[in-house]
Image (cartoon, rainbow, N blue to C red; front, side, top):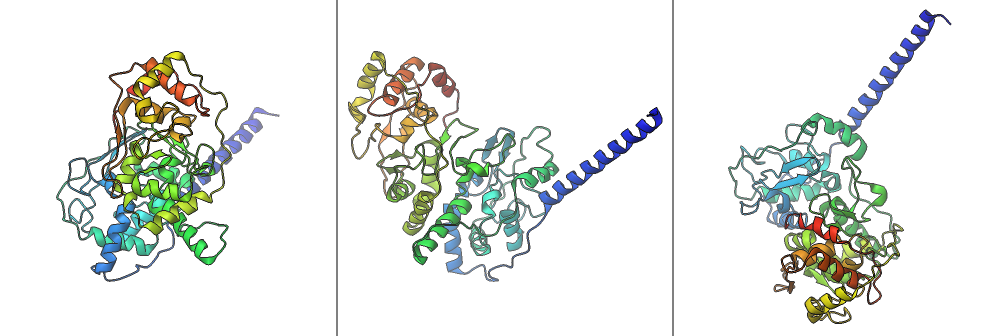
Length: 433
């Protein structure tokens, strides 16, 4: 074969590869920027008292304040730092201020932000705003939240620019991320094994709240290296990328809700505590700001839905921690007075450690952080004066804490992997949040 002919063949192959690349990129761009069919507003009257009241409830259980209210700042005026592995974003002002808030937004603009992840000017929004979950909201619920936000006091506070390094500050690249991780959705749907129409409605409501307003997957579902949710492991539990807490599985696995009843789940959501322990760390904040305000039937719907999810098949590693004389002695000195000699706990304030999911998780992050920083359940309407556990950060060494946890994780029927002193040392480096 002559060199000329070989060159022409290579040239054609190169041209073909370029064309294929162009087609792939164009397809990805289209997938990442496509719009769903338009959905008409549910009302033309946004000052209806009943609509506004419903919007206030929905915004509360959707926990909008968590990202859109800075600590010590005015409600919903933005400025809250949202650290991620790719840089820091800042919650925006969503008060009805014309210049810096959503005062000039129409109901359609607001709907597109929730449903399609687009700003008023059409720009693609960063998924720190969980539109990947909010896309499941109905138009009627989006309109109710919009109506309530319009009643807030406008706050003339400029938004803070996101602090993202290159290439994450190139917003147009979100189109390719969205092509892989986002499709504007209709209402959340779920296939359920219902025994009656009423049961089906309950489970569908639970799915809607879990997948949509509650956006539970945003913390409890593992992500890929680019931050996309691994839907094949939906709600299977994962280590949170910032802060080091482990968001536990919400599926009926051994490391999840296997031995929780629906009543236990509903109680934790509304009260902040249950017979299985207390909400701590980021979940305590969620309960305080959001889930304690769930209506009883909505809390029950979420609990019913979670209990009927299929197990993911995850099991604890069988290699169990083994206690030491030092660990047993330190436990008796610092822990037994509240949690009991056999880890049986004392109601109502001190949970049992025998069979406690926080204690027996394969990842010991939550147990380590609780010993270091203390355990503080949220103050709720149903439990306004919760008991707390003091921090031992300044009292116990890394090896002391590891020894205590190994005693607890290997006693009274508990079987969990051992904790190393260097794991405790790393946990000390996280901010107290």
